[in-house]
Every structure is written in structure tokens, then in C-alpha cells.
Length: 297
Image 1 (tube, rainbow, N blue to C red):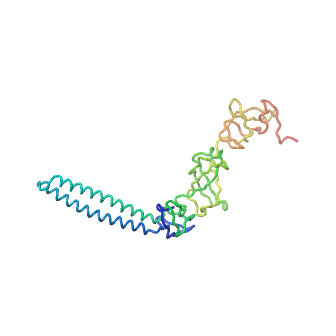
Image 2: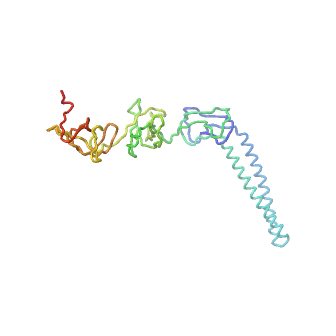
Image 3: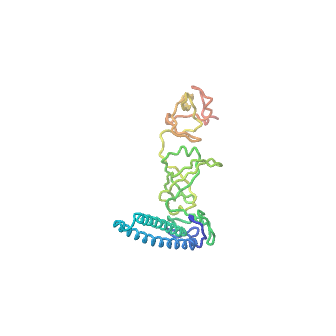
């Protein structure tokens, strides 16, 4: 939160940790100059009002007289021009009063939303600039859990992902969260992407600055989880080597990859009980005999 104008701050009514309500006065500038400007603008408005009344009265008299041919057309047009000039001066004076009144209101920094003060950056007595941060406010409009996701996790995450967020010091304190914002740029050092999860009705124990963990909630997909090292390609299709338990020979079985991660895949095309080769898959050929690692003496 910051002031819209320059000035000397004479009051700051909040400190770090204070809860404030909407409309509460946060800080105040010395308003002597702005009050003087408003009084001057109001005085000019009063003068413009008097001139407008006089010009309109003169115009009304000239309008009646010119209808009776008692004055010349030129005199009537001059009175009309003076009235329009007075009207314009009146509008300009009103605008100056509005501007001066606005500047006076800008000497008061008022909270536009309820929240908690998380930082203060100016003290009473300082001369502050327009736009200089005075206080930092965490509003009560919503609370996020912030994480850094790897590129693979970010890309494999469904757009409607739901998470369960838990307090690290007390995992029983939980809240549901959904993705609110994903940074489009990776961190230049870590290569991760900043992800904001909006908490849904977070409990009071989840205070600002709490350390939390998150678990993605998702239904089990169709297929079987297989080590990624078992995957090979044949005819541009994904496949695995399946061992025949009777002959101890291998045969290539095509699969359809549903999901993938660095060390596992979720695939269909294999059956419950199939023995899948996970090591040395690039050196195998159809019908080749193999031995299970556990069977070695």
C-alpha cells in the first residue's frame, strides 16, 4: 500500500502482525498544503459563481431588450458570449475543487480490503514519494500454498488437479487446494516452475508463512505400473519383453503408455501375473532364454 502523492508522513496506525479491516486508516500525510489548495479552489469557485450569476442576469435582460429592438444585436451577442465564458469558468472552477478535494483525500491511506500487515517500510516523520511502499498487506481474499514444481511434474499434471495440503508439523491439519497460477518461466537457477495452489477453506492453524506439504489427489488410471527401464520400441510402438514361465523364453509385447515418470510408466497391454524384463532389454531377441535374477545361486 502506498500514497498517491508526495508528502511528510505524520501518522502510521498499524504495525507488523496487526489485523486491519476494510476502510481502516493505515497512515496519514501532513495535509496543510492540500487543505490550503482546496480553500483556494473553493474561493475561485465562489468568484466564478458570482460572475456566472451576473452574466446570466445581463444576458436575460439583453434577450428581452433585443426582442423589443431596444438594444443592438451586437450588444445581445456580447452578453451571450460573456454568459458562455462565465459558464466555462464555472465548470473549470468546479473541476479544480474536485481535484483539490481528491488530493486532500490522498493524504489518508485507507485499507481497501481486510487482512494482516506483513511488513512496514516507512516511519512517521519521513518524507515519502508517491508510490513508495508504506505497508505490505496480506489480504483475506484467499490463501495460497506455494511450491516449486519440476518441468515434468508440471507438464504431467492435469489442468483440474486437486491437492491435499497438510501442515508439516501436524499432518492432521489439512485443506483441499486447486491450481490457481503456474509461472510460465522456469527459475534460472533451479529450473523449477513456481505453482500457486489456492486453499479451499483453510483451517486457522494454516497461518501465513507455515511450511506445508502437498499430495495430488487422482483416481487410479487404467493399466499397470512398470519400471521405465523395461520399455523398448519396435516399429515406432512401445513394447516390453514378457517372460514365458514354462520355457523361460522372452517375447515382445506391445503396450500403450498412459502416463510416464522418470522411473516408471503406466501402461496397458500386459496381464496380471506377467513377468516383465527390466534389465538388459536392448540385448534381447525373440525366443531367447533368460533366468530370473532371484533364481541365481
